[in-house]
Image 1: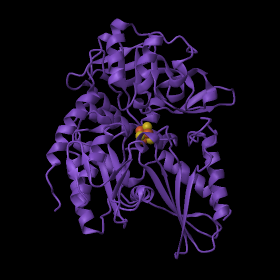
Image 2: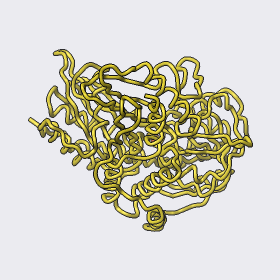
Image 3: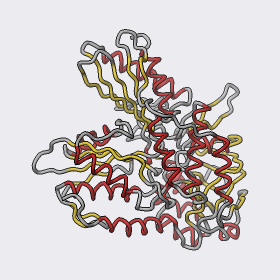
Length: 515
Ligand code: SF4
């Protein structure tokens, strides 16, 4: 097993930087569905360009490399203690080389361990089997989509759909509701794994297990095959679209599993995964630890030719009546009040990252820099220091903004911040502050970590590094950083509009379908 650590390192790097073939085909199908010239089409083009860049740079597809979760099947007699040690060593190395973001945080102190190790991290689950090889699967599922997982206890009342009973039709309603409630916050278009039955923990486990199924397999249980097909056909009618911008592609895959339950409980658990569906697997020789075969590699590959996509992205912007506005911070109130929902902005100049720890800190401390007229970017990048001590952004897409909802409006007013960039939109409190103070919310394309890292021309400084790399305030000089105005200073919110219209569409699925 002397090669096992190297095999695990290769598996981690491949999972973080290259989407498997079945996922690529699902994204290509979504692109065909989306109408050219729309914001959703532009977002999908950016996603495709980002996938291509991650392939070429062997860099993380998304900066949030999640909680690494390994599922391992071993023949009898294999030493699991040694395997665990090798996996942990491979995780440390991949983190050091910028293939994983340091993501393991002490839940009580908030301290980042810096190497992706910690109590319960990474997750490693073993199972014994009769085969003569080792099967290792890895999923890197980020926080944005993990936070949109949901569990239903049947019977229950669901917004837009009414009562969901303890039967197949009740399950159908739960799954549609799960897609609706995620909106664009989990970086749609997404994939869902559903677990029917079990208890609260085994139900979620079963749901996550479904994400390891190939996207284009067929469920062997006839009722579930029908339900998967029904969900794929109808969830895409909700009009949530890529990034929640509205559009035709909301769901890219649906896999449903079932287990027994106790009479008193009936759980439907849903694991939501973003478009950056990073899961991979290998077969390993138990004698040497070498990789015998890569999994999820069947079928046709999709070649997302970079130049073609770039041209399409530019064309998409030029179509229709989309305004494209160049911004150079600091921004004035007057400039910001001219921006409207739907405008595309291209930012050049210095922007400042800030996420959970920074927002909490700024509530009762001074800012380390003058933020008047500036732009805050909700982003926890992957950063590497070179031999001369200079920092470089290796992956730098937006993080989910709604977590900053309790702070954002107050911070904008307190420091004179004029714009925030993030993904998934923000709530009523921030919208009100944008109106009163004169500010905008700019939605960048979630998961497009390579695309945005490429816009970062230099790292000009960093403050509050003691919060850890993802949580520090990075000063980033960017060029042509593109985002869409989705909340403006006139009280308009694209997120509110899409949520409202998708709720109306959800109501058309109220009547029973599966008796
Ligand atoms: S694509 Fe979005 S939801 Fe997925 S890991 Fe990246 S930021 Fe999180």
